[in-house]
Image (cartoon, rainbow, N blue to C red; front, side, top):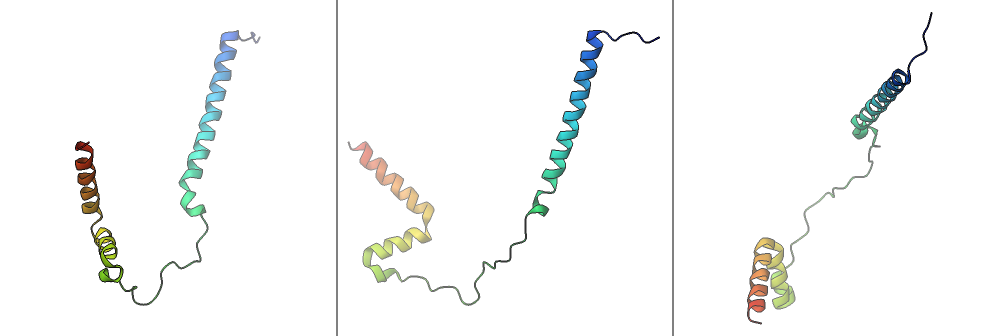
Length: 94
């Protein structure tokens, strides 16, 4: 003879079934994430350009401003350091 299950046993079985369902969904999500790079369409565009690289800009073509721009382009970290030093000097003199 089957005895009716207590509410605690019923709650335990429901909780266990929910956890198993969540694990299955989690496994499906993980499997989908693992296939993500393969699911991207192949790009048919070519981003490289054949031929020689473009000629660099002449430093004297824009006078002093052109020379400064060329120096900043060639030395970005030094340009930031110089800017920070100038800003510190101006800020400390006020």
